[in-house]
Amino acid sequence: MSRAALLVLADGRFPAGGHAHSGGAEAAVKGGLITGSDGLEAFCRGRLHTAGLVSAALAAAAALGVDPVALDAAADARTPSLALRVASRKLGRQLMRAARATWPSRELDVVAREFPKGAHQPVVLGVAARVAGLGADDAAYCSAYESVSGPASAVVRLLSLDPFDATGVLARLAPEVDRVVGAAVEAAGEVVVGGVDALPAASAPLLEIGAEAHAAWPVRLFAS
Amino acid sequence: MHLGHDHSHGWPSAVSADAHRPDGTRRALRIGLGGPVGSGKTATVAALCRALRDELSLAVVTNDIYTREDAEFLLREAVLPPERITAVETGACPHTAIRDDISANLEAVEDLEDEVGPLALILVESGGDNLTATFSKGLVDAQIFVIDVAGGDDIPRKGGPGVTTADLLVVNKTDLAPYVGSDLARMAADAKTQRAELPVVFQSLRSEAGVAEVAAWVREKLAAWTA
Image (cartoon, rainbow over all chains, first blue to last red):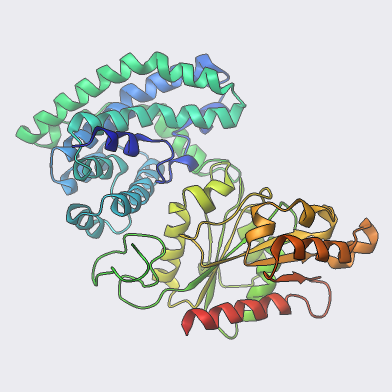
């Protein structure tokens, strides 16, 4: 495997549609939950340990070769908000396009054909990592880091937050990202043996509720 | 690597610039319209739809910055049936969605072809942006850059990727020139300097000719695409 492939996949400029999504940050900013870097850090910490953990475990399991159809159903079951399921599938479809162009492979083609309108993003991410020659921990790192880097860059735009402060938040969360990745990879290993019920099901009700409200706004900067 | 040679039947298309759809048919010609806020991109799209809709099957993708205003304007004006107009959300960065990360726009054009196709032409309108905003060649086959005389007659002189490299430069609202003190001859000379042989159209959508010259250019592009 190539270690540099991880940098390609994890690059925020990897053209897979993420720039148009705030990961719930726009709703949280409007709700007064994020007004500066402290609020951003608290928001990101909450997202990392809930949605971030679940998506990292899904990605790690997909990278280990677990059936993407089963993982996709498990992601559905762990995402109560329709708006979030729609956003995740949209991003999955966009990531699939970028991944197939970047690392052409039969394995990605099969998943693309199974899900013409998109599988859940973490599942696609895991398969993409696998065909890029990366491991379960790499896939989990991509997913867990994305769960906080997306909101951080969105808040820089939404609040005109100092970009150095936003990057500082990500650096301070790094040890927690490590721990979440560890838990996600362990869970993924259990999925290989015992099936998708071993996946974590941590939930963040405010993210779900905020996403539903956000989807109904007539004027917004981000798609989710 | 992906200019229409490697599509395989029954498999969803992998990439962006493929000239063929998964079923092997030729896809629609995609023309992008970009330019600064308020220069008349949406009005030009609306006029093109009215001029072309009776002779060919077309659809529109809009890239609003934070609303659905442009899509709703086109719907309200009823220039096309609603299923032929799609809005893409751009996350505060319209130029990213048309150039650096075109995935959402590619989905929009593919979905339009799947759902209302077959289409001959898809117009992709950028959200109002700056003078450096250009479309990726993975998203569009040709691009029109729309500026207007009221935005300052020095814009062609200033240049920038939009003015310099667009396949067609449209200088809009020429009817306003006397009121805002813009020198059309100077704009034309500056545009010629920046663009050499690339075409420039001066238009007023309020005049009788309206969008006719731009529509003729689109027909030419389409003839070349389908040839």
